[in-house]
Image (tube, rainbow over all chains, first blue to last red; front, side, top):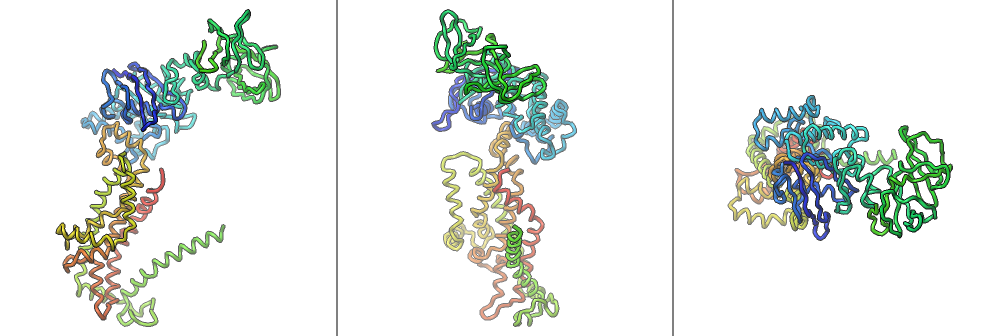
Length: 355
Length: 271
């Protein structure tokens, strides 16, 4: 069973607490990404799972076994590192075979496993080359091959694509996802890139400051962020945040600081009056003939499939994404209304979602 | 810009000349007829080339014994250095333990203690160990130079930790990491270190003079010193001997210089 359970895991460096009691579990065969800004503790948590960092408190289980005191080599995991970590003095074949030889597997078995992994990853022609003779993408593929040959219960990926250029990153993203579908092994994948997290994962764990902010399926996080941090971290371009307050009464509405009234999010059942933040994704704004939010266009970025428009209104920046062709330019004024059925609302003091 | 470059090159050539002239002088003197050796004015180009000094030296003195002794001591010092320094540098570069930096600083500070001061306690230690007049006694202090530790530690420190982590997951313990990853990756540093220690030991005079007192264990530098008598210095023989003594080290350096330079420069650069 390749499930992973993390219960109350903490990590201290001296008096500094890097991981603040994290709980979640990863089902057998699931693809989970840990995502968050630099320094949020995601890599530390991954290294704790791998056995490269000690667990100060709490428990980590792989399958049914508590692995707190189990050495990395005995945890039945494989890890792919950000800068590949290929042994520079060994050929591709020897890099992949190294772990198997240490386990004293027979020559024929080692060869069979290496050949199979090479076939899966299309590395057949590169087996006798040294890492320095490979491109970035090929190196990363070898690093994955090294993980595959061990046939582990869990694969751990520590930002494996961040050293690759944008195009290769997209290609390798698809390869890793295909690999997961083919092998069906549990994968835990660390990245700071929310697009990578969204496109690859079955579930995402969003982290900040050594804590879990939200766990959920990619679109759950996108549509129903549990707090301001998740709302602004997930999604590119980021969600628009408008300050104001909820008004109840005859016609409940959200009153912006600048005076305009917006329809409350449809999902909000019992509005309570008070200061709040109204969140609306750029693609959930619509052009209005009159009324709504009137703003001045600052920048137009046509990307072909969509056009991104940056606007400014009374000191607030807004982003609008339109799938149709737009005929506006800097200096023009546009009126926009949010789609209340897709809007979010957050408590101004705590940042948690009110919807 | 251009003037600055000429100046830099000029300075480099001047420094090269300072090193090169005595070597050439040694080589020329070794093949000069004896009367010209001490002649005033000195002659750069001898009137005739003679190899008689070499023959005379080999006939009068046990040159090859000295050579063999020197070689054995240098090889022994190099081998011990490589083994001992590997473990020490690994512990100081890659293991976390309390007081690590203090220990390293103390070891490095030892570099500033002059060799002559160390020699007195060293002599008594070696004597008490019963190692006077042995190659091991001559080689041991040469194998514990702080500079070796410094060179190797700096190299080890710059090896990416991911490599070590990968090896740990693949199934290595500390010895496995050292053997399978750190040492193979550090071969240029080992090349530089070995050559440095070998040449240092090959040329070493002071400690060998103290610790090797019997004639049959003399090294080359000490043997050549016996050519200096109370009233007579046999410069021709000495230069012929020195020339032959220099050759092995020079050849090794010329063959391996690329490794030596890359090993030394990589020790300080993050890759």
